[in-house]
Length: 110
Image (cartoon, rainbow, N blue to C red; front, side):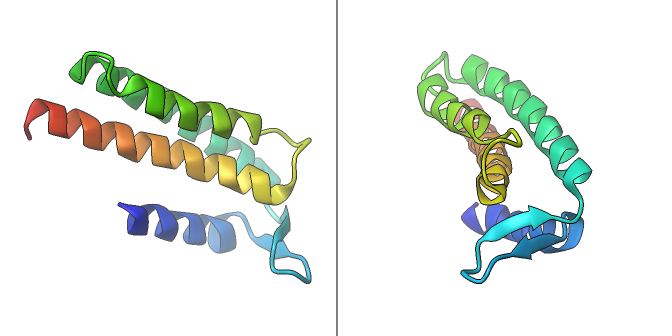
């Protein structure tokens, strides 16, 4: 699961978002800010949707862990934080979605 997330972030970072790096290798900006904003909005919506499904499938036992991921992502999503943090927000939303889907599948015995 970590490989899927890491691969998605690398593709988004360099291909979709055209990340610019500083001299220390940290993301300092994006060539496509609008795409980052839209991707983050969509990732948050999907995370909320899958969190609801996982919550229903696990009778609420998955909620605390997944809510922690969502809270961290929300703190890092706006333009007032660093570009690296905004990319981390996108990553955390994606991670929350993947974890929620996994929990749902395990709870439903699929």
